[in-house]
Image (cartoon, rainbow, N blue to C red; front, side, top):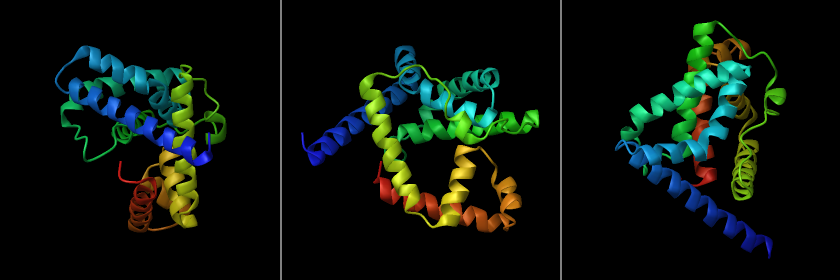
Amino acid sequence: MSERRAAKFGTTELAAARAELAQALVATGQEDRPAFRRVYQLTSAKLFGICIRICGDRQSAEDVLQDVYITIWKRASGFEPGRASPISWLAAIARNRAIDWQRAAGARPSAPVEEALDVPDAAPSAIDAMLLGQADRRLHLCLDALEERQRDAIRTAFFEGVTYADLAERMATPLGTIKSWVRRGLLQLKDCLGAD
């Protein structure tokens, strides 16, 4: 299979997976328990990874993940498929819950992000692994295309779970400037990744 055809196949599969997740989220918003179970099956490994990167330990990440799914159950009716990709919407909930936990605990990540990325997950299927790998590569290529300050701010905020205020302090840059870099960088990422 040619690279172009393989890439097209991956894009089609990715779109199908995204559509399935969006449908399950919409049904969850109508209090459909099997659909909620499907949302969990499709996303728990990824959302757990986000939680553990920010929380720094497995037990805390598991506690936060439980809170994440309670929030998803309560807020799924507010998900608008045409407005955001389902995984972005869910990842934002996980990130925000983990940062809330971090603030409440007065904790900071106990390990560098590189170490936290080596966390075992719930062994996704081969197709899930392929799709996630393609999406990750695409995301990192788009991140690498950003201006260095934007890229660093986005990676630190989203991969390490650092708040904008802490990031401004770390980078000795005004908070408004940090927010502007991140906002512009996210818009460029959205353009690069295509309208999801």
